[in-house]
Length: 248
Image (cartoon, rainbow, N blue to C red; front, top):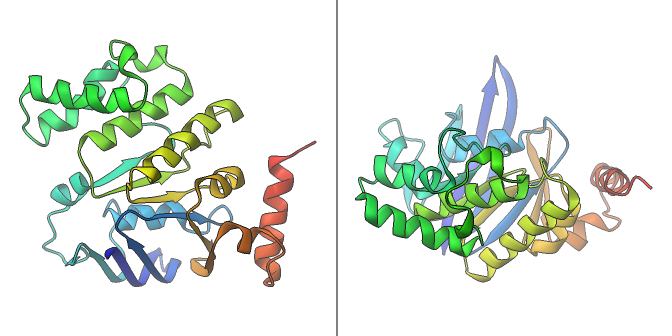
């Protein structure tokens, strides 16, 4: 069953089209990975899908509702779409537990004791509950990302968006987050992940969309796109990414 359906999505900035007619489908419990060169519109796509940015034209159907309509309750929508940011976006003055409970208390109006129980459940799921009293400055990059994921999951979203979840992490911490995404997939969490990380895209097992110059040029299993694709532009991109991932 389609959770998210995107048709002919266009996004323009100052008369320049960043997205040029995107078509995309994401089913319940499905994971898709979006890859492409820097500046191709990957992050803009995520921002349009959760209405952090308003698309110029096109249609986004989320669970049967057209969320591009001007009367869309954007605040309510964002409670159903979890967003894990590239730079974690944790509040430095709040503890791990306070970061995770904030949305539950302020947006959902959940009583503090219930919010704490919910937050600890998700922190336990991320193997972070023993760090509930620490501030972001006391955590590693991988731990911060786990807290950011726990915060998103605590809101019980219908889908989880990742924007470059491993780009700010060293290789070891990246593998930790990849394992978290793989576990979420086994738990049938619906996910859309923007990344430049070939290892992540190969490891998590979802279908890969190649976005280039604002257009989705290909979609398929990772092996289909990465290993000697017929399109020379796609082949050039992935061969270059492989060299960048293995500098030696």
